[in-house]
Every structure is written in C-alpha cells, then in structure tokens.
Image (cartoon, rainbow, N blue to C red; front, side):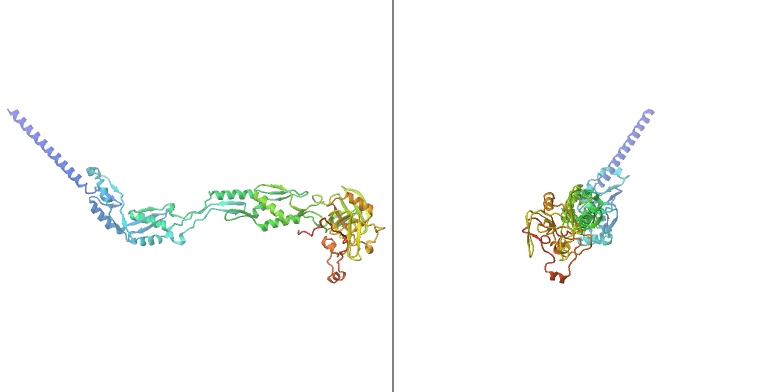
Length: 524
C-alpha cells in the first residue's frame, strides 16, 4: 500500500516535469518564432550596409540613416598609378534616393537564421542611388589635382630617331593625361550608385597613337637599316673607293610619314668629292717625253669625267634599293686607260718647241715626223694640253676668212685644230712655226698624215706641249682649254678682230664637219 502511494507520487512528479519541459519548449519555440518574425522586418544584429550599422533597423529606418549620412558621402578615386583623390558629397549637392534596394536586401535575409547571425558580421553592399548637381560634379572633377597642367604628362608617340650608331625605335611615353569627359562620366556612375570607391581604367586616359610595336614603325626601321647597309663599292683601277654605312647614315632623312629621303646637299657633296678625286680631265700630268726627259702638262679635254647629276641619281637609287652595290662611277667621258696612268701606251706626242710628232701603239713607236704648228707671231699658236682625237675626215676642206684649203686627211683634237697633210709645204720642222706657221693646225707630210690616218682611232690621246713659256690667246685655245691660254687684252682682241680664230687648224675650218667638236671644260 505504502509502495503504491510512492509510485503515484513519482508518476505525478514525472508528469509535472514533462509538462514543464513541454511548456518551456513551447515558450522557446514561440520566442524563436517571434524573433524570426521580427527579423523578417528588421536587419540582423551586426549588419552593415555600405559601411553603415543598421542592425535591428527596418528597411525604412536604414534608408533614413543612409539619407542622414549622405552629407558625409565620400568618393575615393584611384588612378592607374595608385594615386588617390576625393570628392565629398557636399561638394556636389548630393542626396540619397531610395530605390527599394534595402527592402530587397531585407527580404533576402532569412529571418529563421537569426541565431547564427548573433555571432557574426552581416555585411551588405547595395546601390544607394544619389541625386546630385551635374554641374558641380563636373567642376569638382575638373578641380582634381590630376587635371592641373603641372601634373599632366602628355603621351608621346613611339618614334624612329637617329642615334650615334644608327636609327632606333624610341618607345612611346604613356603619360598620365586623362580625358575629362570620360572621368566625369565614370564619377557620375559611381556617385549615382552610391559607391565609395572608383578605380579609373585605361579607357579614361589619352594614349599614344603609335606604339613601338606598330608595324609601320618596325617596317620603317627595317627599310632604314637596309639603306644604311647598302654600301656602294666603286670599281676604279688603282683606287679603293667605297661609300660606307656611316656616310650613308649621315645622308638619310626619315620623314614624318616614314618615307626615306636623302639629304640632297650631302649627296651632292659626296659626288663632288668623288669627281674632284677621280676626274682626270685637264689634270696636270708628268709625262715622259720621247726625248728622254719629263715635262708637266695640263689643260686640254682628255681624261675621266664623272657625270655628277647622273651619278647622284644612280647613287640615290643604289642606297634606296637597300642592297650593296659594286659598280663604276657614271662617266660623261672616259679615258683610254683606267687608273693613275690614264694616257696609256697608245698616243700621239707633239713637241711644239722641237716641231716634232711621234705616234705610239701599245708602247711601240710606229711613226714620227717633223711638223709645222701654229704661227706664234700672229697669235695663232697651237693649243697645248692633253687632248684626244675627236673624229677623222677624209677628204676635208679647211676654210678661214681669207683662204680655203683642201686636205686629204684631217684628224682634229682641240676644238677645230687638228693634224692634217699640207701639200703646200715643202719643209717641216725647224722654226718655221714662229713666223710662217699655220693658223693653229699641225701640218704634217702627206705620207705621214696618210699613215697616221689609217692607224689612229678616235679618242686616241694627243699630248701636245711647249718647252718654253708661251701665252696663247687664240679663241680655239680658250675653247679647247689649252694649258698656256691667257685671256687677251680687250684692246688687242678688238684690234685683231678674230682673236686668232683662223683655220680649222685653229681655223682651217672643215667644211660642214659632221662629227662633234670638243667639249667645254666640265666642272670639277
């Protein structure tokens, strides 16, 4: 009986405890449910929206706090170099315009997960749209230090520049110049969204138009280097002449459109030096005479002559072709032999003083003869110098102002002065030339003139000289660039009336000669 009572008390106690537990569970469940319902309309504790603490607030309360805080709005702007700038909300008259973003953020919050939220931060980043003064925003952006002229580095295009060792590509300079309109647009977007930070991208910067990797720049460098490497080696006997890369580099000019031109003056100067060095036209030469001595004789029209205009054109073409070239210069006149001794071994030698003529072929004396040259007393001395046979004519009629002579063989070498037979003469040599000489031509016996005419070729050198000092004033001496020519006094020129021009001997003028006459003196 007693055990039964105890048993009943235990049962009642157990039911009481169970009831209390159920009540506690019910209370806890109701509390959890109540709090969960609360956090369906309020943000969890430790919630921050865009840096503002809004824990326990409704969306409207959070909007009001953001609106109250908007006066302290700060936009931090970073450029691509890491520099930072600031724009304050008050500078641009900004204010917050709710757009439902906070309500959506709250709805996205799971109210039943409030227990874990008690122990962690709940950071939310949403757009907080702003309205602002567009004019003041633009003014604030323009006033940033990055737009101050002293802080701006303008971008520079990559370029092709001449260096000491040659041309090279100079890389572009990116600079830091921003495009105001694009920065304003980026800031407007950030402010409108209520963002606190803005990192500017390359799109807001001005950029060089031409980079070092530009194909046009690389192509130009390749073309320039090819031109610099287009050395020109001249084939000139006894000489070693070469237009080097360094010389070409000094001539090259690269235009803005990357076309390559050559400095015309420097090109002409080089060709002029080439001509001055290698032209032998009228040079003073040391000549070993048939008499066994050596004389110096210049003048005349024989020798090498570089045609400067055409040589410059050819040289320009060679350089711009971009390929090395081996060639001889462009000549307007050639001598019989290349090199220092351009007279060679086949030539006519005339010693006016000794009144004697020799003809050599390949170093062998073929014929020689006494001659009669121009009359010194009447101012018709024969031209001296180094000449060449201009043409041959057989027969020929030699005409002057007061005579006309028929000859069988005429071989002019100095303007209208030439070697010919003189059937009217019976004596040659001696000193006849001083008083009864020709009008300038070289009179030779008929058989000598005939043999010489049959053997000699056009362009054969003729070396004619005096052993004593003479002054030649005849017009044919001037035109043929005679070594001893001197300009006659004006009164004598008028007095004589002809300046010693006589035959085609100086002038025993050939009747209607068809062959070209000797040239004027070319420029050195």
